[in-house]
Length: 87
Image (cartoon, rainbow, N blue to C red; front, side):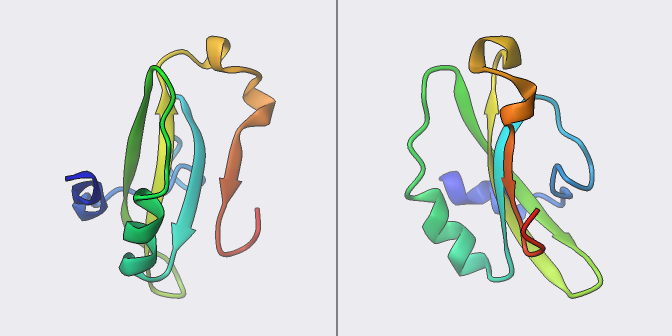
């Protein structure tokens, strides 16, 4: 079940870098992260990653995509992240 990744205690890649994660979004409600997971279409050599953490506001859940080879995927400058602070 893809939503099981949300059970992992793992900080978002913007806090704790994670190799080859090229896109992630942060949610304040687990249900929103679960809904998001069901709308992700993965490409070849891509896997779903995610977890949960806590910051000064409270708990959060994040969902992202990890690619097998960052060079084949594209430029490291094209990495996309979206979180509560808009960065």
